[in-house]
Length: 234
Image (cartoon, rainbow, N blue to C red):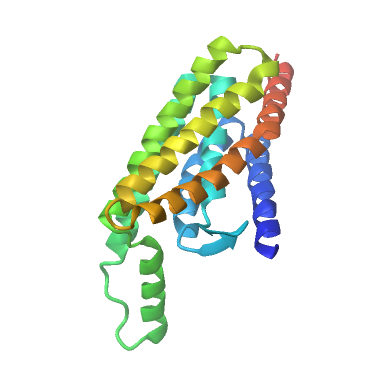
């Protein structure tokens, strides 16, 4: 149960850091989290662990929190600000991938074993196969754009603050489904057999679904921060 407990602790730490960023920096603290989440997720994803009896990769938590951010931005600042954050994340993911792969074109210092080991370790994390990189970008953009659209669609049907939990969960759980499905199909179709693809998809989506459900109290917490800040600004 060690990994499971640690995973839940990491889940809580991510949520608390988001709230802290919002309290310290306001809207820009949330927007800042988007590129941070996609970059950290692409670093953590190379680590494979066992969680709840399933084989999984890390990075699912911090990546999934980007959907929490877009929901908070959508609720408090509107669709335009949430969309801007998504494009910032998309841009940062492309820039990080290109810059790190350009850095890997350099040859490490000849005769320096530490430089060679550092270069190889960095390549393990950042030298993505083109298909994986494309899958990540497509899945991110499609799922995030859907999340913003779905949140505002459900907000029209369930506009009250008491229904905030409902529109948050309805938009995020479906968006996470789109993200997992698109990524697995684009990245691994034809590489693994269908049963393996299904296991990867189910594991990935299950963990993201847990994050999506668990973030609900923090959506309400962020709403209280927003209302309090507006009160003091009046």
